[in-house]
Image 1 (tube, rainbow, N blue to C red):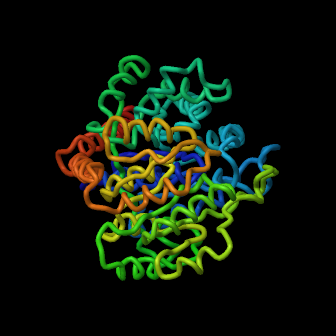
Image 2: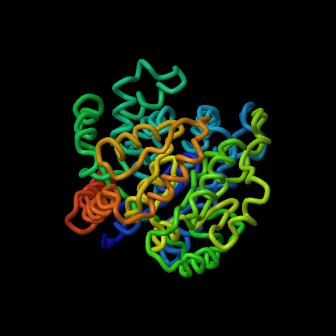
Image 3: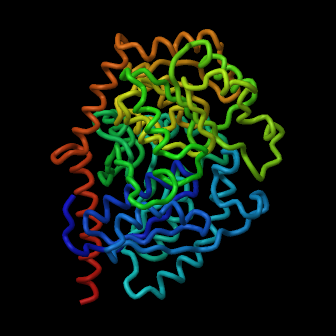
Length: 448
């Protein structure tokens, strides 16, 4: 989207978890390309997530950072500022901690020479960002980093949600506007339901799939994080694989760690299947008293020696975009988190679905039952898959004859059609930028 000069100032407030921070960076990139000025609020230990964005926009004055100390909370260990270090059950505690930034942010607005004309905040933070925006007499727009189908399933069944999970949807639907990281061709029915039954206005923008920012600095792999194998070595290994679609990629995002029994089952399946593979093993959770904290991410002894040459085990962060986009990769065993799902859709790989929590189950129903682009492997956070069955699925998934693979390629085309000029998401993004710009123009007129 071509820039059109300075078209207004926006404050971005992301939730501190990788699955939320990264799409916020991708959205910020698009807003900057549209000529808006953006200030991003983060706490010190999350500042590194901005590095790719700061690199891309180093010559521009339109990107600013606001770094505020992470407020203390009795349930969050000292020094922890990102949810991926803890279990997802800590999410409400993070929301409560961050709500203490209301007053510092209000003061920052009062003293800023050219304060933002709108706030774009994460879906989980609307309980206090709506209030902040109201007191400042500006709009708050909720950025929902998952798809409309998952959101609709929750909002329709609010009475079934635990009490601690109800406030976020209620405040989110009351925001001035709502942005989805999805696209109309995938989500049109659910977007219609949400608009008519809950949001009840037309300020809904489906702007996805937001293309991930490619880091141009010489920092950590792609999107930040430490890895046991450098990206160039991973890509070189993939380059050495002679057959297209012959590699199985196994990864469960930044929030999921497998128990020792689950690790054993996956290892056994990879070994028995005989396929080439890349397996990303997340670092164990830290700063938690969870009784299984010492039983996570344990690769069975001797496994790596037995599969040497045929597979890579990456500990920590993986260059997922480079892996999924490589010609050698044919399938992806995933938890079906929405960011990972979109990255796989853009790469056109066959998804092997193992949903575990929150939106994963709805994503899997969409991918398997409605779109037919994925194969359901098993489900549940504590489930241990049958190793022999999983081995068979691995072997089948790298064959060329799967109808799901053909459908995945067609879905990839639809996704790219949505974000190219004239596409549904491209036009939604243009409308969003125009409306944000008009807010700035309105304020300027009032001050003349």
